[in-house]
Each structure stands twice: as C-alpha cells, then as structure tokens.
Image (cartoon, rainbow, N blue to C red; front, side, top):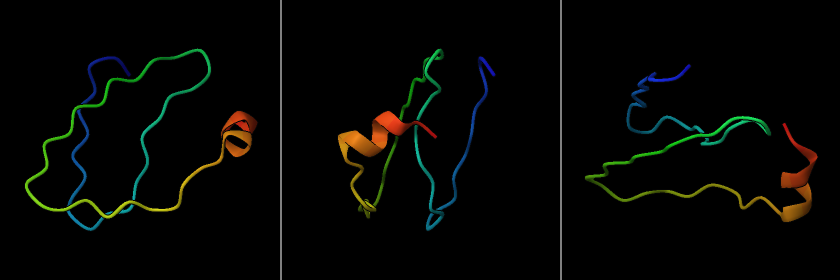
Length: 49
C-alpha cells in the first residue's frame, strides 16, 4: 500500500517490482556487497507474475 516501508534482513532472497497498473519506488541503502540472482529475460518479464 502507499507509504508502506519494508525492511529486508541481510541474506533474505527477495525481488522488487510492481503490477501492470501500479508503480513502485525503490530506495536501497547498502553497506555490503549485493549478490544478484538470476537474470530475467524480456520474454519472461512480459509474461507477468
């Protein structure tokens, strides 16, 4: 919901995104390295969630 704040603990696998008719603002403050997971192809992205 608008204004929600989410804290993700270190080591927790998660994703960032929004639905087709919604927006998302993502602000990340990182004090350590980031371990990126699998890339998502354009075709998979267009399938939705």
